[in-house]
Image (cartoon, rainbow, N blue to C red; front, side, top):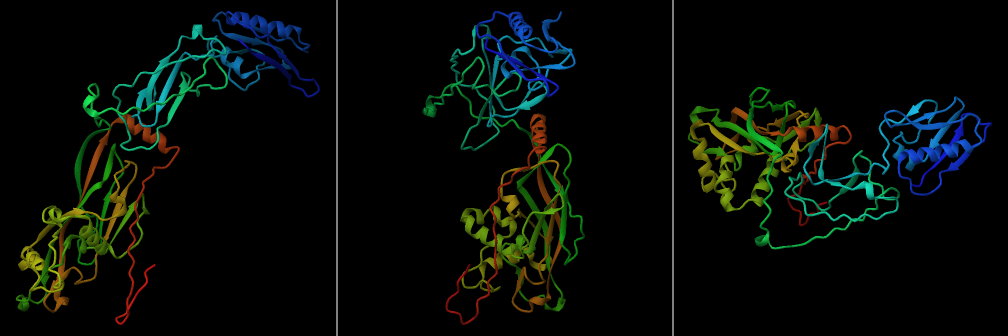
Length: 453
């Protein structure tokens, strides 16, 4: 055991004395205490300092009022004193001293492992490795080969790097410069065919206990021109699955002048999203979406380019997607898509629509924590924008008779809730978004070319 101690006075007038304990192997803490007392007795001190073991086998210091003792970092670990303090008067170690610097166990943490309860805290523990500290001495190399871990739940679906943290049983980082262990990390990756992996199971999701769909009605009135507003409170122990949020609308088309009902009219393509010109999303009263009046154009372009014929003829029809005939986009007579849409809304019948919201926040997979309140404001477009007629379009009125925001809420296990709560005290949640910006450019009638920037 190689240690040193030094004494420092309280006054500046007295000089500093530095003494070193002789190097060598000590059989017990008692021998260390005897060696320290020999050094202290031979030192020229104004007041004597005595170190001893009390009845509970804890190290104690007895000194006067003018002299204090400062112990090196390594000896502090062995004697179980608090590091960095001066030992004065009646000072005693908090627990029994550790002859082997307290390194009996090694805790291996990994950032991809799911949080689990350890004592009164939660942490991503991968493994606990025990050492035979009684045969480990200063300067000795210890080689420990870890076997492959058994099935462990993970909290990351995708990752590029893996962080491994090694700590002692007291939570301190495992020493690499001093101590009774020298750790060398060897990482090896092997690749075997899945047909030969006979002893592993596929990963099982355990962080989410259950999920349910909750219907929220608008907090505003369903008038012709007023925006629709929804509020999703942020309380309880449930998170919000943003990527599965749906909007449900019941709407109808009416003709102002009854005597002109014979005129052909109907809804435009992708009628659900043409009912709104802008959608604002607020999180805890803060606007997180850029202002834009081009929401129906974004929804139309994303639906047109991102889905194939199978989707457009199946689930997208719930938003009333029926493609217009090329060359007759604004024609109500020779347009096959307009004719199919007109059947649903003929004679003022109500049409039930449902679909996903085309907003940046709802195009990512991360959940919204339970402490965040979400509010949506859906702005209505000008009259006649979302309808088409053979003539006299100004007489067409679109009314929304019912509206619902369908939110999927998921119940998270308590250990993850506690871990997120503690993490949010030190850092903010990160939501990577792919921003979509739609700009309006005016092109003159006789222009031969136009440069977009």
